[in-house]
Image 1 (cartoon, one colour):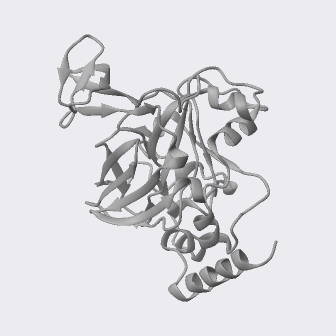
Image 2 (cartoon, rainbow, N blue to C red):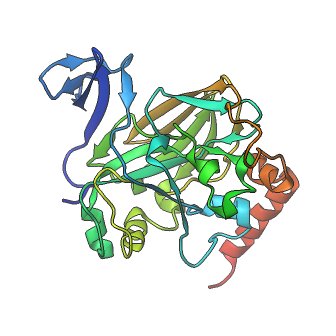
Length: 300
């Protein structure tokens, strides 16, 4: 069944009385648990609304992000990917740890497509049928480690808890018709009309990956972020709202240096790290905007 069809249905996974339960959001704002109870989800601990074996992200798939980082509206002819381990999954109202000795913890607000069935060797049309639903996802990154792991971004993207998902998984909504907004301490820092900016849609990413890699129920495909990913400080609140899908909230907390400090590649503060974590300076950004406007007006 196409995930856009039918009424809007939002499923959440929460902790009630020390146990995990699935439930469906009701019109009155209460969560109807599978056992028949109705609870207020406001103060409940939320778990990720899926149990992924894989979390796969597209590197750059929004026009504004490509302009910001590459100076052109499309970064490459075909999408490229990175992975996060399943232990990166986090939930709504979860904590994001910023470790002593690291400087740059960047947010990236994204739409996550949650796989609903075993998916391998599918067409573009068939890929839509493999999606259980969509959810807001915060693709967090410790940019201090950008100069290591031979570009795989294992540590940049893979810290425990660096992939908040939720509050729930939603069917009956086409995210291509919605708007993505990210808020830092209540101030909007990212905004995009998804359908106008997205370069590669979720079905394209799924069909591409599933040519050679089997996707399992619960796996998460992160579809990319618009411009203005920046670093957070301890105590910051970061919220991602996608109209029709919901609002995901997380808080940054301090964590001590790991006990094995002194071994392995250290966090770095290099020009490349700062370029990605903090963005170009305003002059360069305005030049890129001017180039983009000129390219948009040029005859095809």
